[in-house]
Length: 359
Image (cartoon, rainbow, N blue to C red):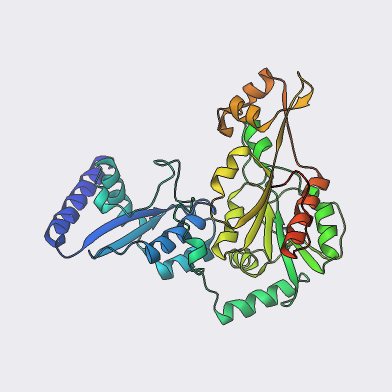
């Protein structure tokens, strides 16, 4: 059976590329993969692709770009919106053609999209600064807006409320046997307690987002909305909250990238040092990093020491490296996260007073 499938696939590919030869002087067909398996991989990268196409790709030659997706779709509403803007065909038709082109280096039949497997500066990087030059591509219809407002009202978020979104990745999202991945990317949602209390003074509501969470919120705040553990969680609302909020604040996870879809300002907390290299779109305003504590030297390592230890790649911060060097990864404290948001708000209000050591 597998042999028959292989023969059919090869015949299919041969016929398609014979057609391509006939029409090559009129139009070039190109293929691409939308990585729907992870929200970070199919949100901001596609937004940047569309913005780059709008601004940069003025080639007179006619192209038809055809996409396919992963089997897993992390947000069906976002895929629905992308299908309005992109030509998405069934996987069984495009997947064999796409991988045939990759295998045989037929780059002229591949959509100019920087794959993360091929390029360290992949499509998530806004290398041409196109996001701040273009408008968001995702547009909510009036019907969708009314539905979302009606749903959010059920959990105490009214259409005129001002709010920010906060989130923390925990083991519900992606638990691995390698502790370092969880240590680096995960942290306690309750570290936002002081920040939420501070924002309450400014009449902001604090909305916890993320549709896969395990940890409970253990603090009380009359302006707190725990959307993540409510009964109304949906793919549409996940995006609508990003669209409607004032700003994002959270850790280094794919959810963080939703802010860029709607050109929202964002703050990153508990970031690995390498995360700074990914935040090149002008939308992330401030960032604070996790720290590495050396039990052997009884002190926190400097950024340069941490980068040298990990060879500038946190994937190298393995369990073995941590144990062999008697290291601990320290999360940001409640005070540090609150101070970050306080400084951000004061800078927005032009009331921030620089410290003597600031440039």
